[in-house]
Length: 185
Image (cartoon, rainbow, N blue to C red; front, top):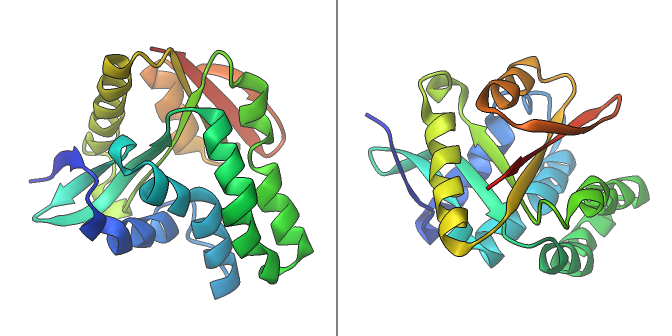
Protein backbone atom coordinates (compact mmCIF):
# COMPACT_ATOMS: atom_id res chain seq x y z
CA UNK A 1 0.00 0.00 0.00
CA UNK A 2 1.33 3.43 -0.92
CA UNK A 3 1.38 6.36 1.47
CA UNK A 4 2.12 10.06 1.18
CA UNK A 5 4.94 11.51 3.26
CA UNK A 6 7.33 14.45 3.34
CA UNK A 7 10.33 14.29 1.02
CA UNK A 8 13.58 13.17 2.64
CA UNK A 9 17.12 13.53 1.28
CA UNK A 10 17.31 9.75 0.77
CA UNK A 11 14.53 10.13 -1.86
CA UNK A 12 16.66 12.19 -4.24
CA UNK A 13 17.59 9.49 -6.77
CA UNK A 14 14.09 7.97 -6.81
CA UNK A 15 12.51 11.40 -7.31
CA UNK A 16 14.89 12.07 -10.22
CA UNK A 17 14.02 8.66 -11.67
CA UNK A 18 10.29 9.41 -11.40
CA UNK A 19 10.87 12.83 -12.95
CA UNK A 20 12.41 11.21 -16.03
CA UNK A 21 10.16 8.15 -16.25
CA UNK A 22 6.66 9.37 -15.49
CA UNK A 23 4.05 9.41 -18.20
CA UNK A 24 4.62 12.29 -20.57
CA UNK A 25 8.39 12.13 -20.27
CA UNK A 26 8.75 8.75 -21.98
CA UNK A 27 10.31 10.39 -25.01
CA UNK A 28 13.46 11.79 -23.40
CA UNK A 29 15.84 11.02 -26.24
CA UNK A 30 19.26 11.37 -24.61
CA UNK A 31 21.27 12.10 -21.49
CA UNK A 32 21.58 15.81 -22.28
CA UNK A 33 17.80 16.18 -22.43
CA UNK A 34 17.55 14.28 -19.14
CA UNK A 35 20.04 16.76 -17.60
CA UNK A 36 17.96 19.66 -18.96
CA UNK A 37 14.77 18.28 -17.39
CA UNK A 38 16.40 17.59 -14.02
CA UNK A 39 18.18 20.96 -13.82
CA UNK A 40 15.04 22.85 -14.88
CA UNK A 41 12.18 20.93 -13.25
CA UNK A 42 13.54 18.94 -10.31
CA UNK A 43 16.79 19.82 -8.58
CA UNK A 44 15.92 23.28 -7.30
CA UNK A 45 12.90 21.99 -5.39
CA UNK A 46 14.53 19.04 -3.64
CA UNK A 47 17.75 20.94 -2.94
CA UNK A 48 16.39 24.37 -1.95
CA UNK A 49 12.84 23.71 -0.72
CA UNK A 50 12.68 20.08 0.42
CA UNK A 51 10.25 21.13 3.18
CA UNK A 52 7.73 21.92 0.41
CA UNK A 53 7.97 18.50 -1.27
CA UNK A 54 6.06 15.25 -0.73
CA UNK A 55 6.45 11.74 -2.13
CA UNK A 56 4.36 8.69 -2.83
CA UNK A 57 6.04 5.99 -0.75
CA UNK A 58 5.89 2.29 -1.60
CA UNK A 59 7.68 0.36 1.14
CA UNK A 60 10.29 3.07 1.68
CA UNK A 61 10.81 3.93 -1.99
CA UNK A 62 9.59 7.18 -3.57
CA UNK A 63 7.57 6.27 -6.68
CA UNK A 64 6.06 9.69 -7.29
CA UNK A 65 6.27 13.21 -6.00
CA UNK A 66 4.92 16.71 -5.78
CA UNK A 67 7.76 19.23 -5.57
CA UNK A 68 7.16 22.92 -5.18
CA UNK A 69 8.40 26.43 -4.66
CA UNK A 70 6.61 28.56 -2.10
CA UNK A 71 7.45 31.94 -3.63
CA UNK A 72 8.30 32.84 -7.22
CA UNK A 73 11.11 35.41 -6.85
CA UNK A 74 13.60 33.32 -4.81
CA UNK A 75 12.87 30.36 -7.12
CA UNK A 76 13.46 32.40 -10.28
CA UNK A 77 16.67 33.93 -8.93
CA UNK A 78 18.20 30.56 -8.02
CA UNK A 79 16.98 28.87 -11.20
CA UNK A 80 18.42 31.56 -13.47
CA UNK A 81 21.66 32.14 -11.56
CA UNK A 82 22.52 28.53 -10.73
CA UNK A 83 20.46 25.80 -12.35
CA UNK A 84 20.20 27.36 -15.81
CA UNK A 85 23.96 27.85 -15.66
CA UNK A 86 24.28 24.05 -15.38
CA UNK A 87 22.24 23.83 -18.59
CA UNK A 88 24.56 26.23 -20.46
CA UNK A 89 27.05 23.52 -21.51
CA UNK A 90 24.15 21.68 -23.19
CA UNK A 91 23.82 24.44 -25.78
CA UNK A 92 22.29 27.86 -26.25
CA UNK A 93 18.87 26.58 -27.34
CA UNK A 94 18.47 24.40 -24.22
CA UNK A 95 19.81 27.19 -22.00
CA UNK A 96 17.29 29.69 -23.42
CA UNK A 97 14.48 27.15 -23.07
CA UNK A 98 15.38 26.51 -19.42
CA UNK A 99 15.41 30.25 -18.65
CA UNK A 100 12.11 30.73 -20.49
CA UNK A 101 10.46 28.07 -18.31
CA UNK A 102 9.72 30.78 -15.71
CA UNK A 103 7.91 33.16 -18.08
CA UNK A 104 4.39 31.86 -17.56
CA UNK A 105 4.84 31.79 -13.76
CA UNK A 106 6.04 35.40 -13.86
CA UNK A 107 2.68 36.50 -15.26
CA UNK A 108 0.71 35.07 -12.34
CA UNK A 109 3.18 35.36 -9.43
CA UNK A 110 1.12 37.88 -7.45
CA UNK A 111 -2.07 35.83 -7.30
CA UNK A 112 -0.37 32.42 -7.38
CA UNK A 113 3.05 32.80 -5.74
CA UNK A 114 3.63 29.06 -5.29
CA UNK A 115 3.89 26.50 -8.06
CA UNK A 116 4.47 22.76 -8.29
CA UNK A 117 5.43 19.80 -10.44
CA UNK A 118 3.89 16.39 -9.92
CA UNK A 119 5.01 13.08 -11.42
CA UNK A 120 4.05 9.53 -10.55
CA UNK A 121 5.48 6.39 -12.13
CA UNK A 122 2.90 4.89 -14.52
CA UNK A 123 2.25 1.75 -12.48
CA UNK A 124 1.22 3.96 -9.51
CA UNK A 125 -1.08 6.27 -11.42
CA UNK A 126 -4.87 6.29 -11.34
CA UNK A 127 -5.05 4.91 -7.79
CA UNK A 128 -5.66 8.22 -6.02
CA UNK A 129 -2.03 9.09 -5.24
CA UNK A 130 -2.10 12.32 -7.30
CA UNK A 131 -5.04 13.72 -5.39
CA UNK A 132 -3.45 12.75 -2.08
CA UNK A 133 -0.21 14.52 -3.07
CA UNK A 134 -2.09 17.68 -4.02
CA UNK A 135 -4.13 17.57 -0.80
CA UNK A 136 -0.96 17.21 1.29
CA UNK A 137 0.72 20.13 -0.48
CA UNK A 138 -2.38 22.35 -0.26
CA UNK A 139 -2.82 21.68 3.45
CA UNK A 140 0.88 22.42 3.97
CA UNK A 141 0.63 25.75 2.13
CA UNK A 142 -2.67 26.76 3.73
CA UNK A 143 -1.00 26.29 7.12
CA UNK A 144 1.80 28.59 5.93
CA UNK A 145 -0.65 31.23 4.66
CA UNK A 146 0.20 30.90 0.95
CA UNK A 147 -2.68 32.42 -1.01
CA UNK A 148 -2.46 30.62 -4.36
CA UNK A 149 -0.64 27.93 -6.32
CA UNK A 150 -0.20 27.22 -10.01
CA UNK A 151 1.27 24.71 -12.42
CA UNK A 152 1.85 24.27 -16.12
CA UNK A 153 0.85 21.17 -18.04
CA UNK A 154 1.67 20.14 -21.57
CA UNK A 155 -1.26 20.81 -23.88
CA UNK A 156 -0.71 17.30 -25.24
CA UNK A 157 -1.13 15.65 -21.82
CA UNK A 158 -4.85 14.91 -22.02
CA UNK A 159 -4.88 12.80 -18.85
CA UNK A 160 -3.15 15.55 -16.87
CA UNK A 161 -5.39 18.29 -18.27
CA UNK A 162 -8.47 16.28 -17.34
CA UNK A 163 -7.14 15.63 -13.84
CA UNK A 164 -6.46 19.31 -13.11
CA UNK A 165 -9.82 20.43 -14.47
CA UNK A 166 -11.64 17.72 -12.51
CA UNK A 167 -9.73 18.71 -9.38
CA UNK A 168 -11.02 22.28 -9.74
CA UNK A 169 -8.02 24.16 -11.08
CA UNK A 170 -8.81 27.31 -13.07
CA UNK A 171 -7.24 27.68 -16.52
CA UNK A 172 -5.08 30.83 -16.41
CA UNK A 173 -3.61 30.71 -19.91
CA UNK A 174 -3.45 28.36 -22.87
CA UNK A 175 -0.80 28.28 -25.58
CA UNK A 176 -0.26 25.76 -28.33
CA UNK A 177 2.23 23.92 -26.09
CA UNK A 178 1.11 24.48 -22.49
CA UNK A 179 -1.83 25.16 -20.21
CA UNK A 180 -1.30 27.13 -17.00
CA UNK A 181 -3.62 26.33 -14.10
CA UNK A 182 -4.12 28.08 -10.80
CA UNK A 183 -6.00 27.56 -7.56
CA UNK A 184 -6.61 29.91 -4.66
CA UNK A 185 -5.80 28.39 -1.29
